[in-house]
Length: 136
Image 1 (tube, rainbow, N blue to C red):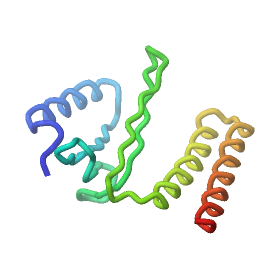
Image 2 (cartoon, rainbow, N blue to C red):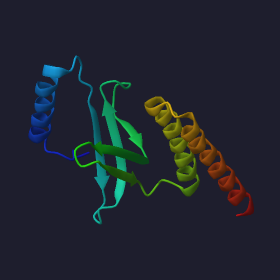
Image 3 (cartoon, rainbow, N blue to C red):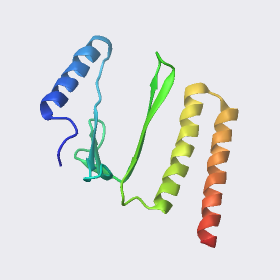
């Protein structure tokens, strides 16, 4: 599969990251994402590899990436899913993501009340999904 960045640019970006990080960071971890698109720019394949994951390239049918720009105080998200991602899988993926966000939010803020609100929303969400699946 063709990489999103030509290898020379990708290598340059990695070298810059490592050079900058060595001055302030004890260790660098890389996550590489490759998105294969069809002729209409619709995602067909998502693959990833990471220095802290099991070796090799891993396949996925969906990804949600959220980044925070501390200077502009804005969030940016990249949400991608392939044609193979089914609605039931997407429902489960969102339930699991919301549940994980609740845990992450608690670890980051120690705000149990709002974290519990997110967990409750996740439970309500999956219950509605189950009801919808039963009724068709």
